[in-house]
Length: 273
Image 1 (cartoon, rainbow, N blue to C red):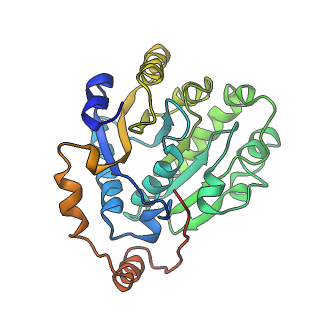
Image 2 (cartoon, one colour):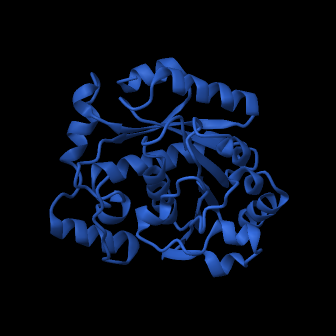
């Protein structure tokens, strides 16, 4: 599947966000490092659309997944967390990918203690979470367990998510691709909804429709999809990306000023997306 329209036609899910392709040397966290960029604004649009996707019920716990690896679900999770936190929401990002965790890499944080310790040793959540920015915390995986399904299909994690639902405004759970196993389906049953990340030229139709069928069988609500890594040159209706690039601050001085105004910090990390 190569274009936004093709993905919309084939899957039929509500499109909640369309994220432009990052440059090869760009930060994985544009919401943190280039808050005035067009890419960051796309994540703010995703946040706004997500908020209105469940007007009848409070949306607190969201599972983020994809059909296959390398569609960018972890960077989408991180930037969505920043977009929610900058509005004053208290947000927890949980790395629920016990097979191939990556949130600690996205944020350049240690992964010595995390979700597995909390579930196995019943550690206190405050001892294993890390404050990333005001209103935003991270719970990494910790030591990957030998049998992730045993932990994810347990009363302990259900109790943990219930506690998080009380303590945070939003809980974003980064889960493995659906082609890998049943992890995201198990966690999706404990959430208010699932957000499916789809990347053009990465997701094939067979894998994507297989993921859709698995979501339907599990009975979990799908909030919609975010199409990540959109290349404007591949899109017939790409006027938004071209005009938006010139609208937001682009100079280094403007970026730093915008960063401090939005988050109250000047820290930045440069990671290859």
